[in-house]
Length: 465
Image 1 (cartoon, rainbow, N blue to C red):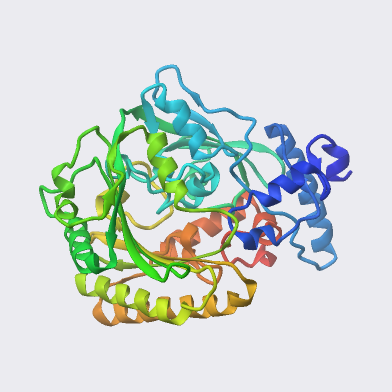
Image 2 (cartoon, rainbow, N blue to C red):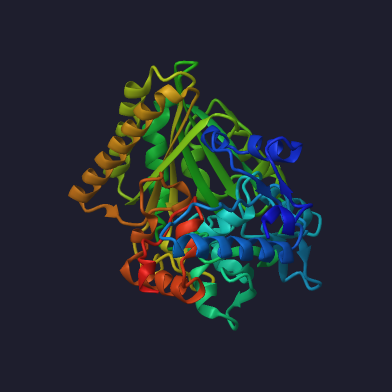
């Protein structure tokens, strides 16, 4: 039986409006260029299980003939038949994987609750939580830890088509593996996240001229040092962005500051307050309003690339990274419609030690780290090769400089990696072996390693299974 025969009301082909709408809803133009044979939009966990069972049957048939086909991909965000349902006592929330973080915050804002969730309202729940901004970096991470470390349980459809629960008491190995392991173990259909009381927050953006770069980097460095007695668990950020817009021929700086209590200009942000800015959007607002603002800075429908690395918090290294960003401007200045951005985010050791165990390998860090992200937006496919070559070269230059200064760190945030980067190596050998063991246990034939395209895989030889 085919997918269309088994799920006639949930399978759509290329001429159907739902199919067209789905393709056009992808954020990056490169994703819209890939047109699948059909779209499956399950309406229940049972339908997910049926679909996975059929895909596994086809995968087994191909592998018996010696082939390893790319059969399917899994997407989260945009359409979810499972609503956002808080528990009666307000201590947890059941969230469908197909939801976006906007769906979550809008529901919880009305109840005075929050979860450790995405900072951009349009981001899908599943991708962020499984790959994690460091396992999911949230405005609340200084207080409660990463997004993945606040997931109490997962409902997941395994490669054999069965529905399982992963929690601290049920399938605990799988529970830990899903905290940073991405889409390598099955299709997660529901998350149960820990929730907590929350009020409006103080949040927004400071916009500055490029001439303030040195002062901004100094303020960022001093905040990230987190000297004893200065750590504030309500300080979300900073998110420091240096941007060049080719169409305007200009550079600018935007800094996202958040305080998860309704207090204006807390002491933790005084280093940024002292720098002159052009204008500010910072105000006391709802969490939904704060995440919507960050979504407005990420328009859809253009060619997009992310590439990342991680360094120790060192002032000279940060200045060198900014210098490579400026070199990128010169190299790609003629790329039509290009917007080139360097983003710096702090990763403090205390964040990695909050919440539940995960597979990220960050819990042993004792020094403050900086997540370095470069994003490129451009219009034409003719510029793809130049963009790829330039960004690779810049990341390699940064890594070589950091290694020479003793400020390199192997961790790579999975959801910000370019296609050629390998985030699981940065988790550490022990954690990568653990993830491979869990894959062999829950997906012994390698369906999600070999037939599920997209994401990052664990580099396993399933001929051993």
